[in-house]
Length: 286
Image (cartoon, rainbow, N blue to C red; front, side):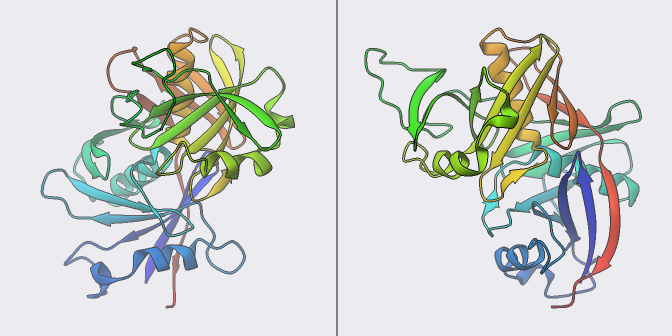
């Protein structure tokens, strides 16, 4: 089974083209992709990646994307995965222009490859209603707790104030006064991901405001653990920072793997820009 390894600011993915009739393997669409993702994404024992991307035909867009996490769960949205998908589609001639539409589990998204910005993707309109994220909150003296900002939760010994948003997938963002490099993300992240407030689990971001134009962040991804970068996570951080009046627009989100640019006017779609690169091509024997 042929595959391509790509990375976007250190967020790495395995991509497999399973379109028909282009797929050389007639069983392509019938595979247990959750099991394939678990096997191929394993560090040291597999190819190693933060997720598995599938290229599929679409009746409503130019192409369709499915994305599976290393634990085999399927993600609704993946910003860096979508950017890698777009890079592959353009470089391989699967689309006829640098701007096209991709069907995802979270809806149809427009993508654009640009020399100065790398790959820019539309991430949809952020959702703040607790039921849409989803997050279960005690409304207390606020019958309409929308958006959920600076909501107090306790995870182990950590007292956190989280702000929640859906970027097609659920996110909980926590701005810290202490350096994010000192935050015990490996210990706290699983507790937030699986907190009873989040019926579908959640992606968890911790962030420091460096200036009105730059924010530093780390991300614990649902189904993957801490990653070097997360596109939808960067968008969630930028959106929450705008709601809390902590940043300008656009804003640069610096993650361990590199810097992404997020543009949101406060009402419409969020746009995510940054580099995406092919790392290597390979064959998986299964």
